[in-house]
Amino acid sequence: MAPGEHPDGELSDLNIRRALVAAISRADRERAGQLLDYWAARHGYAAAYKDLLEPALKRIGRGINSERFSLAQAYVAAKVAEDMLTKSAGLLAQSSEPKTVKGPVVLGNAEEDFHALGRRMVATMLRSSGWVVCDLGNDVPAAEFVDKAIEI
Image (cartoon, rainbow, N blue to C red; front, side):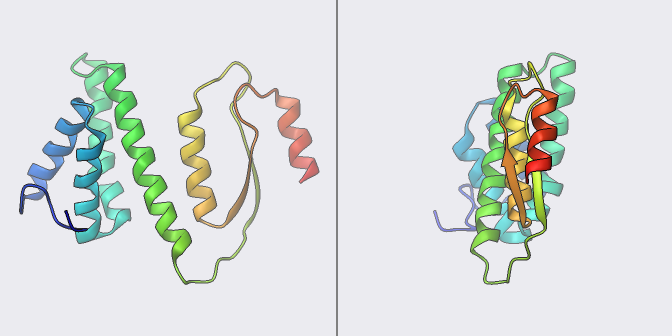
């Protein structure tokens, strides 16, 4: 499939939104990625996130509260979002525009927090925007954040 080519031919925006939620609910990351790439080729990655992925994530989040979606499906949705952010950040890194370094950022998960996905997504976006990210990882004591911030 060529970039920008949709696997089902032309679909309406509403059908693409529905197809994305359906792909995520089936844990079909490849299909979800194809749909996002198709949208991004037509509208750009910022619009793919804002107009396609974000509404899908909100719908799935509401579905978890009403038990229409499982936590496993929410995890797949987060991985699809991470895939897209990684891809769009990679494209930004390849651009020929000069990059301005904006300074250091210290990231990590607080003590007893082992949920790395959100932190990795934030780090990816910060790096793609020119920030120098020092990622301390999971389960980081508060004093370690302060020490690293002073150090760098």
